[in-house]
Image (tube, rainbow, N blue to C red; front, top):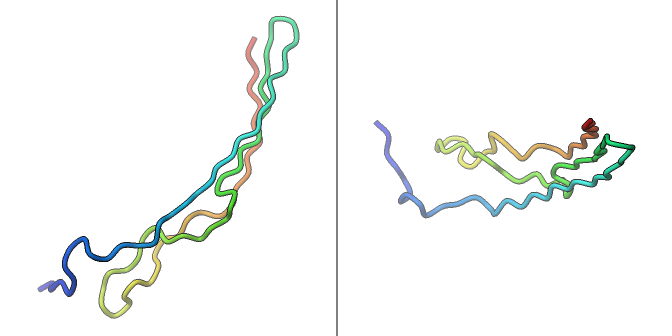
Length: 79
């Protein structure tokens, strides 16, 4: 039997802020066009909680956190 110790919707995790950035440059040559871009995900590199354990023995132990900083370089070529 499961017994709730807290009323529903009374406990919440901290607010999660994430900043994603994209820098890009359009290059044109004749009728072709290329876009070179750099994407940076989670630029502030926070470790905000996404999910926590709700059982009594391990109350509020993190089970999932925000992914680490990640960078991606991409090139798109249109002709």
